[in-house]
Image (cartoon, rainbow, N blue to C red):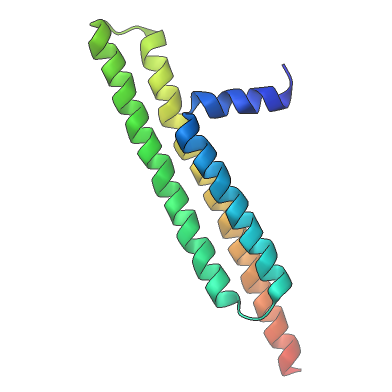
Length: 128
């Protein structure tokens, strides 16, 4: 099994509704970061938007976690017994969503740090 197939499988196991939405948010955050680097006028609005999107991504991931836990416990209650396979599917969804959301959050924060450093270097060059 190649890497892309494994990644797609994890996205589907984590709940496509949440995982692909987080992926779209990652793409938007990366596009805003690149736009911020190329624009070089006002980083403030770009940084604020990236911050908001990164926090929304974390909230979305934890919403997916909560729904994953509900699904896991619904499966257990529907079958009347606790088996690893019943619990595992919901727990996997409950763990994959926030994990991916936190990774996107960290990428966004790294982008913010780079934009702030670029802005400070630009200001320093303008003052000289």
